[in-house]
Length: 423
Image (cartoon, rainbow, N blue to C red; front, side, top):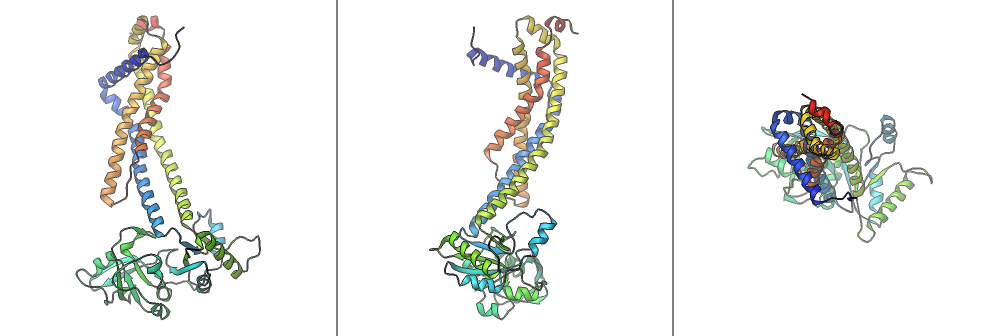
């Protein structure tokens, strides 16, 4: 009794079946192309969207890491996905973080530095103009410690001072991209652009940086004292403050976080067992939140792409059933010459897998071209992982086999005598 193991004969049979499948598909090129359009669309969507999401993922993760591995961010609520309106209302009822909280935190022995930031929760956009030149950008209010905490280098001029923050002076430090628009071929330091209709004096210009920060490029930064921001542009009666906290090297992130948590719970008079009425977010929290977002995007992408693949699979099953009918006499001849049911079954399964596999290859090519085209048109980060190629081609071949089982079984089950009589 011959063991059912891969042998040279079995390999030869597989190659011959694949050759026959290619020959059949080539003889019906138009029909085969129309059949695999759904497969091509599905795989194109998978590879194209994967390249865009992976590219954006790499960019965002790099940005989060560059913000500072040891930085903490404190707000009354942050770093979470809100389940609904009721939870949002509950979070908004939390007490605001105050300037007094910041001063108390900065006095902790485990904290090296802090910065107050306004304009991070909801973008505050204003028109910035100088003579005939104008643009619209989001504003960010900070203390004089912003530059040191964020390693922001000033190329010309200086950053604003503690005195200017305390006196609510209308001074601004601009990103290189803003100055290129407002002050072409002119030194912007000392000039007085109008921000939201109010005159501000440019005291410094940041070095050129193209990475993202809070949804805008660093080259488009417009940084003003947080006190001026609150007076001129913040319509809420209480400042919606976010604190950036840098722990001391000796204390480390965990110990500093514990100290800040203990201090704020005491200041907010929380009893043991009560949940915190504030959120402290670290780099790992940002990454976890981003992973949740990208995971949801990937799931939606797979569901949408699967529709195209299913449509393509149904088309493959239809065309394979037609092929079985057209080749009934051929199947009868093969069986009469000694072909086994298994041989016929494998022939049609391989034909279906080859058909959808070709669709997968075209889908990979088109998906990669789609990602590259989007990247070139809108300067979007793109990364095409190698595994997406194998997933696209492999998954399409599996679809072919799955939807080819019924036609292949029907072909293998034909009675050779009845098949030979078929006209």
